[in-house]
Length: 296
Image 1 (tube, rainbow, N blue to C red):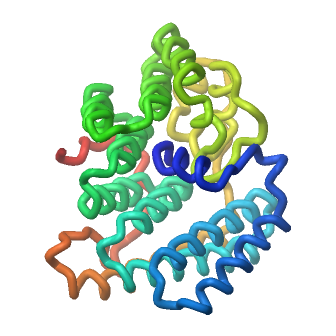
Image 2: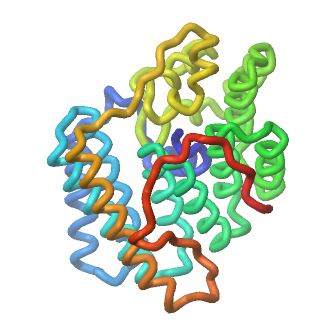
């Protein structure tokens, strides 16, 4: 999962291309620039948010390369910056969206839904939150009607037609309606093919030009395949499973518990915002079973 709406905006702003064009040296240079900006203006929430996103991109790169110490370090820094951004501006929706992306990639869709729901509460007029919730519900196995409700709300707020069509393509494929999936894919190509260039805040390794390309990428990505395993099986495609050493998984849990602790401190002072955060001592278990859609 990527999440679709946010990444369209990020692509347009940053001009990010495909994975073979993204060099770690360029990412390191971006991080160095943002670190300098943070050090010059440590109280600027937007810079802390942007730096958190950059750290997470490095974390993902390190994870893909199985550079686990760098992954753990970069993930911890990413969460620290995102949380600090919220401490400076508790009403910002953007860090919650990024936290949802991280949760989804780690296989915790319950936490992803919670984060995207928080982003919606803080920015109810932003279409990104609605398409993010719709995509998460696809992966959770929710009925198509629930997915469409959120997409319709996003459309009323100006959602990207390409993002909407990609969600409809995914849910059609998930439900075994390949002709509908093909129709929606062709509409993506016509309306906004850029939405096919990133997934879960990471560039795709090669261009997605056909529906089979999309299926192959999804099934081969831990950010998508495990959630649509039955569709992959029906398409005779193997599913890539996210696997990390036990020690890395334990460190992810440590980072998550610290994130919860800090967010609880922040929003204990802003109960008016009605932000949902699990307690640090609550058990963290991935949630693979379908759940009802969040209330509109």
